[in-house]
Amino acid sequence: MIAFGPVPSRRLGRSLGINNIPPKVCTYSCSYCQLGHTIRMQVTRQSFYEPREIFRAVQNKVEKVKKAAGAVDYLTFVPDGEPILDANLGPEIEFLRPLGIKIAVITNGSLIWLRDVREDLMKADWVSLKIDSTREAIWRVLDRPHGALKLSLILDGMLEFAHSYGGELVTETMLVQGVNDGDRHLEEIAGFLTQLGPARAYLSIPTRPPAEGWVRAPDEEVINRAYQTLRERVDQVEYLIGYEGNAFAYTGDVEEDLLSITAVHPMREEAVSKFLIRAGSDWAVVQRLIDGGQLIETEYDGSSFYMRRLHETGHSFRRSSEA
Image 1 (cartoon, rainbow, N blue to C red):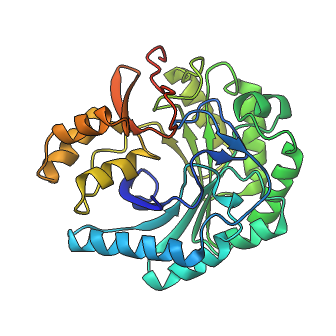
Image 2: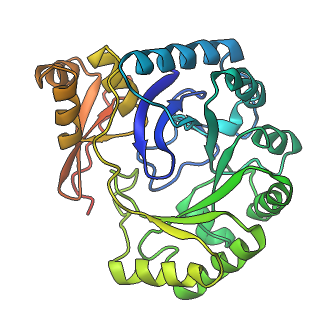
């Protein structure tokens, strides 16, 4: 499904997601990715959908939301893979402009050293760049990039983009216990952010089931120390460690909505329950999707989550050992 949600976003309000990349086609295979391992890694941009197809899907979803008395704050390119692999990203943004809704792109920034990528991102109102490390070795352990990528080129591309971009630029740094949460390393990230000058720097921790069982969030003391370190260099630093809430939008088709949302945004059990109540439905819908192999249940940090099965094989995402 190309358009999904809207889903509650800590940064963007009610965000209608745009899936402009097929499942798990990415430049990275992040250890903490909530959607599991990358199916296909690549660094070459290509066309996945026609821009008009993206527009029609988003327009249809926006109309459904409005008919259901809902609202959309942002149209957000946040697919199952890396959005800037889409060679049509720029034209797609232009096609969506007549809808009159701000446009955001959440990217790992891995191809921002390419001029055409920077030009496409310039067209968005809000761009988020991933900066998990400024050290090559840590970056490779944590984000597990395609072998052709070089961190130095990426960081230089980010600086070049930031110096010309007229929209709102933010960054996100995912903290993983024992990997990138050391004091000296955090000081280096803060130093780079000083050069970049984002409107906000977000610190996040794994809050949904990660791809690798060894991934764990730092404790509160470390998270606070990271915040204070970045705050010394960046005016606005915020946590992305809370739960977004249960305000998932209902557009008229319960099964379609559940599958479209959980394809990129695992839902907690209580969020699913409240969604079903608003939709006038019951848990039988969820059980039917599970029995049909379209939805799976997984556990993380003592909570049950539901997510769409992305692999057509019998691959299981159930990872009950993560803390």
